[in-house]
Image (cartoon, one colour):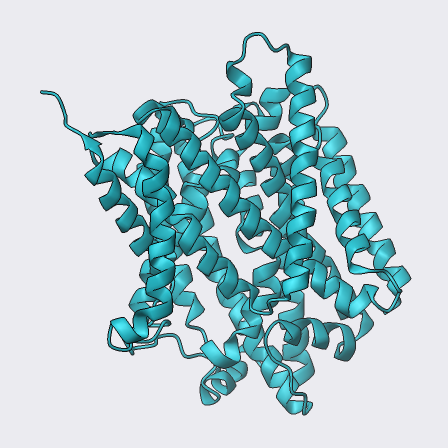
Length: 482
């Protein structure tokens, strides 16, 4: 497919997003940017959050894991369901009761200013690393399979995409993101379904036939029963549950959309609906992965991992299917970055600068500062994407979830200590207590085989991190005065 056609498709796609941005951001102010005026329809938020939850990592990486890991990733997704229930019925009631715009304001009300700043900073670091890793993956695919042939360097692609994202999020913020995510989720899921149907037709097999073939090749293996394995099903379930709690319930990007819904009941409907839909959608991505490996084997192609889907779609499928892949891919690209930049801007302005607490700053002053922060985060994203490009890590989905285990653990410990105890903290020690557990967990992860009789940590490392943080906070608690 001609690079000119691809670039034209991306340009047309962007124009649609820009129109949505213009339409939704009319008369938008800071409250619209940060909280969507608390008027977002819950079903629109739920559907749009599918795209944010999946992103380009799921679109490219999950199908590529099937040959080695089978369908075991689905155990992580089933764990998500458990975690989402905790978000819906434990965390959301707290956020709505306190009428929060930034969820980290809870830490200030519960413990104090230092805990509040510490939690917000861990979110900023966590979301920056995770979002830029996702963004890098999709840019790398576009670059390697399309734009290199047009002589466009990687850094120009990265700059152009970030300029596009800033352009349509600059004014409307979360009020715009709620609607652009809905459009992008539609295109991404449409691309997934069309690709599944195309391969079934090309191979002249039914869904049942394909499933039987996957069982023969052991692609459909769901449960890993070896407790020492990193993919042991209980580790996957437990890790998935706490990944959902931290990367959704304790994440300003995800919660910013949820608490833009008017009522708690509707926000809970959003989370429950999202959790159920994600099980089906991730199953479909894994099923697609099995089909892609069967297609590759029948055509004597040795393709694996993140290269599997892009290579087949762009070089071995008909041009129209390549077009479907590109639309699905860029639909996965934008939700992984636009919401992150918006949420990071909100968190930095509200949590670190206290923008909404400074009576001396006029609306215009706040608007100017917010825009400077927005552009600054876009530049930070560019720097991080270039660092990933220089490192060129090819297992992005594992990298993201491992990084989440280190960076979201202290947030888990802080919020858990706030929700499940009545203790106050010796605030000056909170940053140290939150910084130590990631290093302890890194050491445990690197040496667990020697220290723990062959045990390998999986995604449950996030829970261990949170527990160590919780214990550390307990040691610096203040006595409750009776």
